[in-house]
Image 1 (cartoon, rainbow, N blue to C red):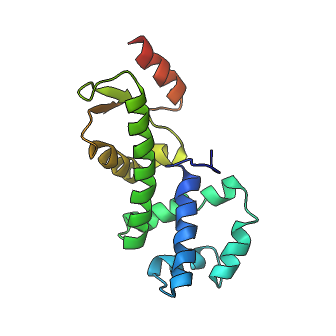
Image 2 (cartoon, rainbow, N blue to C red):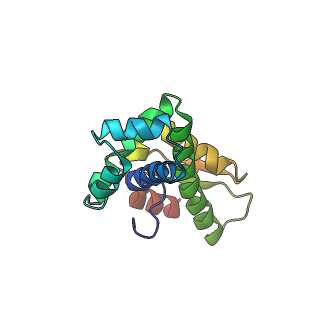
Length: 160
């Protein structure tokens, strides 16, 4: 869940973005990304961002994800770094789950990913696939549609 992990989720992506902006303030090294995030939220300072952040619930925090992804797709280097860090966190979890399974390093494992960020953003899915492929382990991806969830895909794979 979001308090102990939730890597790859909209919440996680948004949390990393807010952490980035607060680190920039601590280092007195504001980036275009940090300034754009504050402007996007109509906030004047990092202190206002922190005050708002602690009042937001998980869903409200996660609503920052589309902004972060749009900035990354537009080429902002800070946003790209945030997206890659989030995707790498999820890739690490996928690889850990694969290693916990009864597969050898040469077995191709089918995976399915879902969640609004992964379903709605091909850029993010591509970054995730690159992070998983970097491990050098064979995977294939099951398509996820509104009628096919991860749980159904897992059962399908188990029955294969």
